[in-house]
Amino acid sequence: MREKPTWRIPFGILMLVAGLALYGLAIAAASDWIGMLPVLVQTIIYLVLGIIWLLPLRRFLIWMETGHWG
Image (cartoon, rainbow, N blue to C red; front, side, top):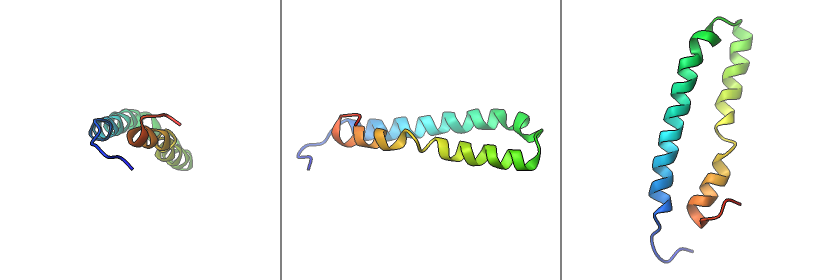
């Protein structure tokens, strides 16, 4: 249990929001190219891209709480 406030939590939240915004913008920029593909391929791509951003999230949240990456 933390006894005093830490800078990591507000900084981490700001970085998370900024990172997700950049990730969303990158996907939106690629949407013209993805839109030319068959619908089934588009579905698979968007499902994968919708899950990929979750992969580093656990370690990032651990860092926000503890200051360690693992």
